[in-house]
Length: 399
Image (tube, rainbow, N blue to C red; front, side, top):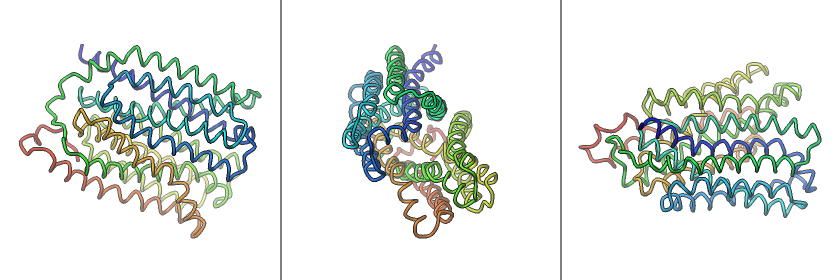
């Protein structure tokens, strides 16, 4: 009965991850059409996109506090609010209106992001079962499906607003399913925490875990954003082959996270994070040294497969180490620090590439990832000091 309740509980936040994948996959494929629809130049469109981050960061901080106070029922509400917000970019007619719409999209995305991650963490802490990698893997898989479906829709001449209406309807359906299972999630979270003491003082640990996520996202989004240009400009690939770069990264993220779900049940958190980092660094180094497109694509798959599990592992650990009444705030803090790297990474990479070349810029990502290993070891010491010595033997092996 407990296992069945845990599975139903995990199903509720998984609906949120699927909904998130639907929108961002649709949005990524719609960007050229939306840009043309509002008549924005590159500068105006870039400023509009920045509004996503401006809306997401404060919403994540607020969402962390709300989930700690309201509980599981906030999840379906946040999914439904996001489903309504995603329609707005399709109604925009000017760059300013698009920026305002994306500000609300960012708020909806940020709120839902922290709520669904916090719910997964709570269920992991209550049941002792890992689910974060599965959740993030489903997001990546749905992202790919939605992006390809949107590409076909654009080829068929379907307007952006119509595509967003279909996406919003699908997300609203997932919100309904999430609401149906939210009661099961509340029951599962009430199960005993299997002898693992919750950390009461986690500020230092949260900061370190946030930096780990930040480094992972800098590399992940850097490879996704610049791989096509690297293949075409540095390696002479044809455009069709260059466009395979981001697709390979997306596929590797899905494969790596779904595979990481099985590995997370067998190894400690520290082993998971260090092993994934070494794999990502190996792929990143091969990419920076690649002399042909085929080798570069293989290197991208290896690098993205490794980096794919770092952020989910750190978010999962943050939720499991935090005290139950502050779990949402802990996950939100890690998310805010981490997503700073996600949003800033491609821009920073562009600055390095402008000064020293794109190949060296991609190689610098290996150095960024190298910082993860000492952060993991330091985080383990900080977390260890925060737990009473009598309780340490009961903890799951890890940092």
